[in-house]
Length: 236
Image (cartoon, rainbow, N blue to C red; front, side, top):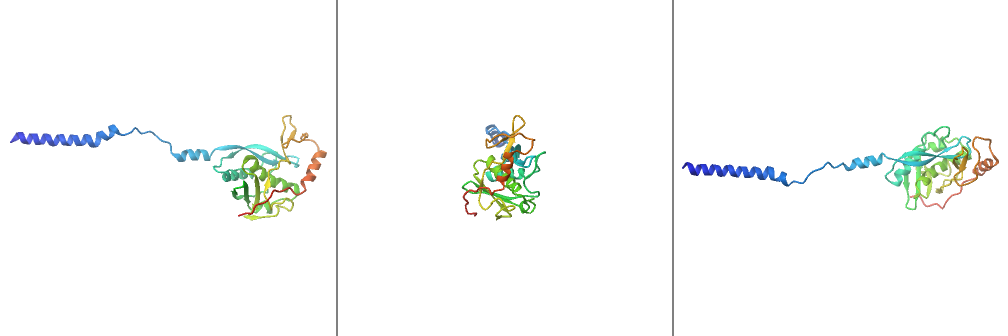
């Protein structure tokens, strides 16, 4: 009588042990090794907080031309985001001794890019209401924005400036904004190696820090004429 009971108990214990091994240990033996995988959003966050090296434009000390300055600008994941980052950086105070060409208080409302490579830059009304006037100052304000985008983003061929979501004729009565404008470096100069200044378009160098030259006077007079424009496309 005892032997069948003992055999039965041994059988039950054996079955329990086999069950434990099958449920607990076997899955651990055959489970794949695990490693720490970085979260995808961590990489995206690092990219979004990165920087690009860009050329920004400010009014030179003599007030007769723009000067290109290299600066770190936040990285944008799309062309529209990068264009916005460039314009927002351009709206920051100018490094001394240069001056800001865009009216104080101006904000970027929206930027969108058409399939033909035209960027539409929607600025706040302060770009007009706070503008100090003058044809040369208006010319610099317009081409500061146009050049900041087209120089740093070659895929963008032209820029049209809007104010509060609407097309405008001008900022202050001189530069035609009814059509997109292409890059124009005629009024842009950068520091030369010998301490003078050189024209970005390869023109003749003039010595910086001296009196106004005849060439500078001609440049200022020419700047008072309306800037040329490119063929416009309907704004959707």
